[in-house]
Image (cartoon, rainbow, N blue to C red; front, side, top):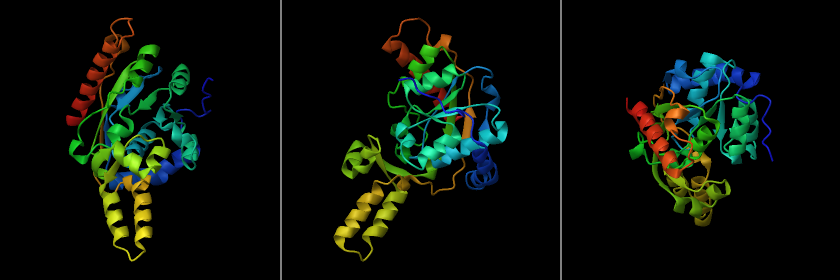
Length: 282
């Protein structure tokens, strides 16, 4: 069944723009001092994929900072929709947030519909795998072998614009990432997440719960629920966040022949990843 685009796909609602300009923008400038370079490199008048590394669990600081900078520069004059986990389109209040932002679920059907309508897409290919990486790998770009974004770019013959993000992973220090943690906590798997992490906030909260005078069974139950809650990935460190956009990578350069081979996708993935890695390290 074809995906039905929201009417405001790629364009935040008036309420969302007002909230960003009056509250979110000033707050993110105060806490994260975000800066962005290369917005002038985004193609005009045609769709593209803005591909970036992903950080900090549920990426609150990262996404709010980018949204604030983008709205401040373009308002609603330059549409840009964002890929989001499909679960968020079935759970309130995320459903309301996505409706106001004009974002779309991360599916091939939604991508095809948005690009056919001429709307560029912001994609974090690494998803939860990359966003939950340990703090020791904060500056490492790792998409976990995911190639779906390249299949989209190849099918539509559109350019990929690389964007490197630095600093956001320090806002949510994550100590360890594992599929075993997701399975043991259960709730992350119910949310559609294959892996989960233990953050500094999660560890501090668990220690506080275990130190209470509650019944041991109650303490264990509350600690289990807390560690499986997305709240453990709330940003607690006011770290500067930097965004750097590179030159577009043209489809004809990434996909040099018509053969839809795995080797071709891997070569393109290596080039995109290395380009974003350079932008992060620069």
